[in-house]
Length: 118
Image 1 (tube, rainbow, N blue to C red):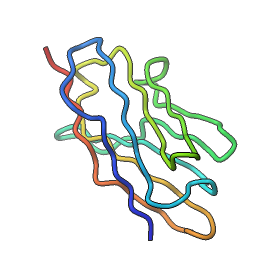
Image 2 (cartoon, rainbow, N blue to C red; image 1 turned 180 degrees about the vertical axis):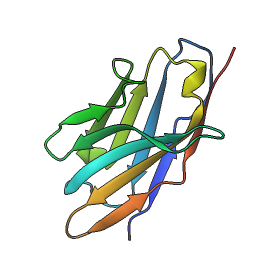
Image 3 (cartoon, rainbow, N blue to C red; image 1 turned 45 degrees about the vertical axis):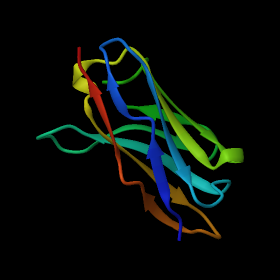
Image 4 (cartoon, rainbow, N blue to C red; image 1 turned 60 degrees about the vertical axis):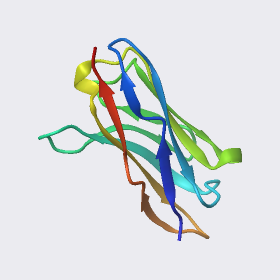
């Protein structure tokens, strides 16, 4: 079993920056895909960003050019760097990892709140 713990959320002013971290309790060297999702109040969950095992990234149009997803195998962590934040980025952000052997499985973190407000 693998636990994921997100951190880095909080309250930030518009145009500010935050970096979210998703730390895994086991090695992510065999990670197939890592994701950051977000869910705003009253809205459905949406995929914000993803990174594959070979480093290919993909972003929702709403965050493209402002968010950057990355992985750090040495620290078993994936990150989401968020710049130029807008009030509409306010949401609970959750990470998800699809891991290969020996920790084969689909793992989710508990989520971290990001609030963008002046």
